[in-house]
Length: 181
Image 1 (cartoon, rainbow, N blue to C red):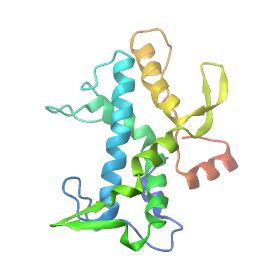
Image 2: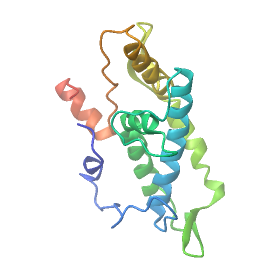
Image 3: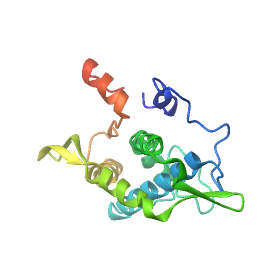
Image 4: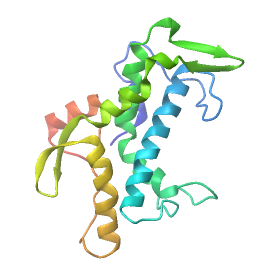
């Protein structure tokens, strides 16, 4: 099972902030996570619209005003990949990579995190795409998942099993056991 806590296992330090700050984060790691999740959210939102689904009618996340619940649901599939990338990115940053502005902490603009996340989305991973390929970019998987869900909801597909995306450590363990739960 993909979990955020498994990302911290095996690290020599615990980068997890004492409290997860979703808005006006002061912790550098929280800021990286917030930005990474927003980029992923945008990619998933576009994919859901392209599949002709309503981004606000989700299954797992509660339906609230202005909250794209289905986007949050589909985004869960890819969070471990983004978190894994961001933790590695955070570990490799120089000490002066952030600047304080009032009580907030910002990543310096020259560090181009958005470009790095886009590079991550271009990475090829094992995924059978409509019987065409066994290696597919993460961005293509993001686009395919809402299509598969839409096909199931419309009765064009017998079942829907979400893709199983893992952090790097979980991916190594899965290859050893050949299972995805």
